[in-house]
Length: 424
Image 1 (cartoon, rainbow, N blue to C red):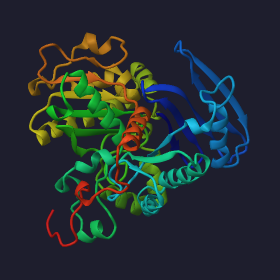
Image 2: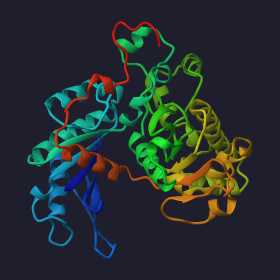
Image 3: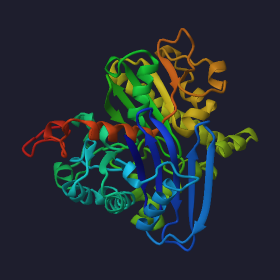
Image 4: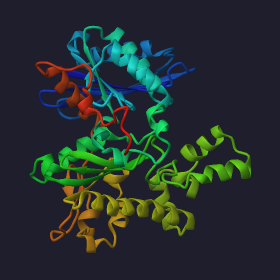
């Protein structure tokens, strides 16, 4: 089976193309600035030698339909292509940021799924409209392929009600869907599975804390292969200190700023999501730049790094308590995989909890899954590279390849209360 993975934004299309027999990436790229004056296309073909043949071009791509048609042309290109006909693309896996409380598992897309997706737009107004547009466009362009929705929120569907509910009036949940959903689920699911394999165990045999650190960041408590808590909430704003997001904050701060500075809701939204986090603390959301500034003695950079690592450490302790025991801590994504200093600070001083970092292993360059804890550490510390696109392709193959499949999740799969439930 050959699977095209699509991640559609409001003005972009990211894509990866896989041959699933060997789970091999054949091609990939991005179409950017769709509908703007000058659009940009970057396409890569992976040669048998492992070398990358790269094409970059600029020109006007007026809409997503033209963008996807250009993707097809590149996939069929005599030099840069990997298929002779688009009919070889048997399935298309779509990354969907938010599935709400009804779309809680990977599923084949039909008209009913699209209607449900449209109802989730208020929960993810910046992301889901682009996802829906991408699906509708791709269904027209790849009319003979099976289209599959893979949700970032799906891995977190097993979080119990006492962990996903907020202590707000009951109607806020029942009428307005206010609850924790969690994000980065595709990454957390992938690295949890890979970490269990690295440890030589089945996913249901281990308790893990997965730590996804990029410009955005989140952690998940994964008990026996199932997520039981995560740091992000109803939106990606909660939890860790991130590149431009503040993470956990006293909600009354917003009331204070609104009254004190006369800030409206839109201004507060921009402040907390785009101007806070590392950027707000020290002027940059690039961890590499932050570390350079820290080494020059920059106070704000040092403080930002300490806050960043402290928040991670605090959640490690909390999630150990939640699960009652821990087999491994798993670092992943751009910062998690590549920044030894962040990993070291996040686990520093936790020997009493059975967490002991090997500084030499931590700072040694490496590829693939690797252990960076001491040999004696009861809790293993592992670095596992994430691959969200491959995970989406795997999920797409699983659903399409099943002898029979449900296009809609059963209520037993969905962590939500019945209408007459009175307690959380």
